[in-house]
Length: 187
Image (cartoon, rainbow, N blue to C red; front, side, top):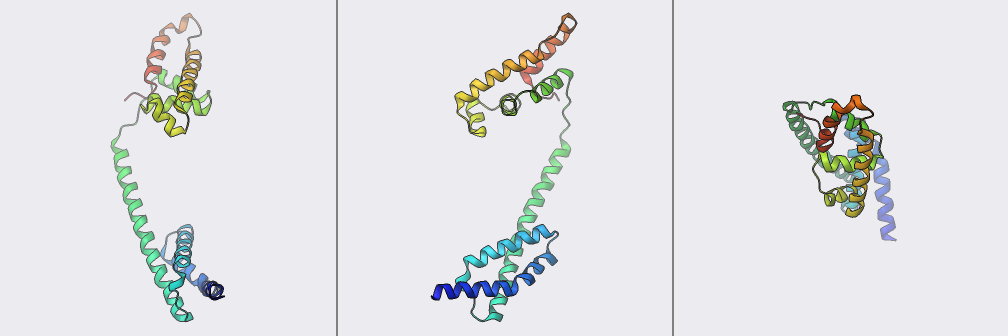
């Protein structure tokens, strides 16, 4: 009975203050989505700590606002870390030169679009990202032997797609073969 009363009291305190608490976050965070996330974090924290909630309604309200303040501080720290990481990444990306794609690399990329998506990803992970079949299996949550089989079939499909279609394309044959071997943009 005591537990039911405590949970009922908790719900009553939350209902009496939820609009003010949500507005607290809305006034301090940039978006309503951020405010809603922070409010959800507050509700979860308050629920976990509900035994500490004072019985007096005024003290309970202040306890909720103090907890909201702590949640807000945590949200701001998280946003600052996220922002610092995004800024660092943006600086690094600006220093990288954009890859250039020669004709044969474009042919390979286009051919990859025409095979099943998971097979294309096996090719990309293997040749573009340099992962072993065991590593590809781990990324895609497949058996390594399945990856090896699918990689073999995908390479065969790509070879057929990239085969020259007549005598005029003999010059492209060597370029396509070398593009398939590296299947990545050239710098």
